[in-house]
Amino acid sequence: MKAAIITVLSCFVLSLSACEKHPSPLEQEEQQEEQKQSENSNQHENMQSMTMNITADGKTITATLADNATARALAEKLKSGSITVEMKANGFEHYGSLGFSLDRHDEQITAVSGDIMLYNGNNICVFYGSNSWSYTPLGKVDRKTADELKAFFGTGTISVTYSLKQ
Image (cartoon, rainbow, N blue to C red; front, side, top):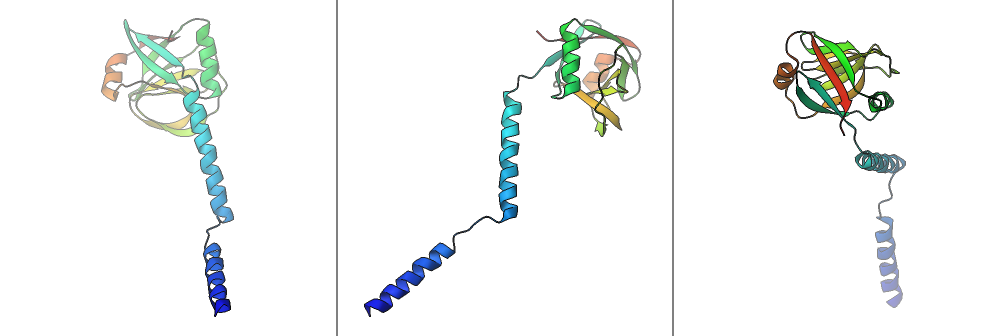
C-alpha cells in the first residue's frame, strides 16, 4: 500500500514539473526584442533633447531636434551661431535654402503639421499641412497646431532665424 501511495505521489510531482512552461525559441526571441526595445527607450529618455528656437517677425516658437546624425550636424552648425533662411510658402509648408548642405538620410515619409524636414540636403521645410516625399527628419515644432503654425509663418516669403535654445 505504501509503495502504491509513493508511486502515485511521485507521478503527481513529476506531472507538476512537466507542466512548467518553457518558452519556445520564438517566445525567447520576442522576450529578447522587448528587452532591447526597453533598453533603447531608456537610453532615448536619458539623452538630453536639443531644442531649437525658430524666430520670425519678432515671434519665437521652439522645436525639439530629432535624434539622428543629420539633426546633430544641424545642431553643431547652430552652436557656431544662428542661421537665417528666407522661407517661401507652399500651401502645406514653408521651405528655404539653408545655404549649406547636410548629409541626407532620406526616407519615404508623410510629413505632418509640425514636422521639420531636410529636403535635397540643403533645404529646411516646416510643415503645417502634410506631404509624402523623401525627406530626412530634423525635428518637430513643440505644441503648435497647424493653424498656429500657419499664422506664425504667414502666407508669403518670410525671414526665419534658427538658433539653439540656451
